[in-house]
Length: 288
Image (cartoon, rainbow, N blue to C red):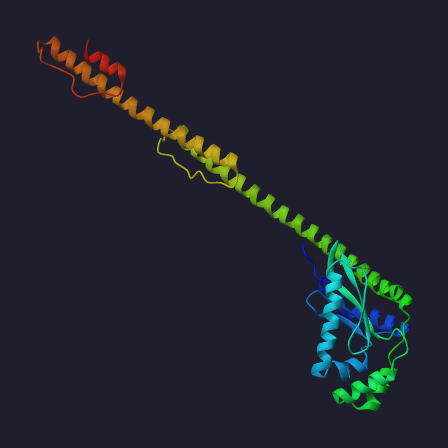
């Protein structure tokens, strides 16, 4: 079964833990599913939310960064760092639960080194950002040495996977309970079918034993054995009907033979038994 991360943990409670972690290390982070939906996010950077993500041209650069990171992770990479064209850095790692890639942990935006302010002044002019507010937002970005990234992202990824495994365990327990309930329902259904089927078979046998050859019951059942028993009962009833019919024919045939013999004994040599009988003995008597 394919799981979504939202199936595996409480979003609101996990958001509190993510906020505490991001406040502690001073970085922005997010957990985003494979459809691009942001499940959790904390400490979004103003330079992105108020500037880069709002202008159509700089927003395209943001999307390019997101796409590049997602492509790297979809190819099996365990860690990806990308310098976007807006001058900021993002990093990401895959979140695996039960062997499934269910989401990605993103870290950013941040800087690997102190910023080139001239580059950002140029961007403020190029895209019409208020320079002072834009540079203040730049100054609020954390500078994270590249060698620190694996530890920070590793914690975020391990945290998400741990919570996901706990949720997966709970789901599997619920699935087991559901399977047990389904098995119990199937057992009750089969037990009911068995009881009803045996009752039909016994009632039919009672009718047959009382001499009723016209008994016939439907042979369908959820249980193969019951279907076979019903078929056997119907065959028995049909056989009994044939026997009763032959017995009647035999009795009538004998009566006709005795009548013919009586007529012959009185001198009526033209007396004959009429018709053809299914009873072999009656046919033999005709030629005697």
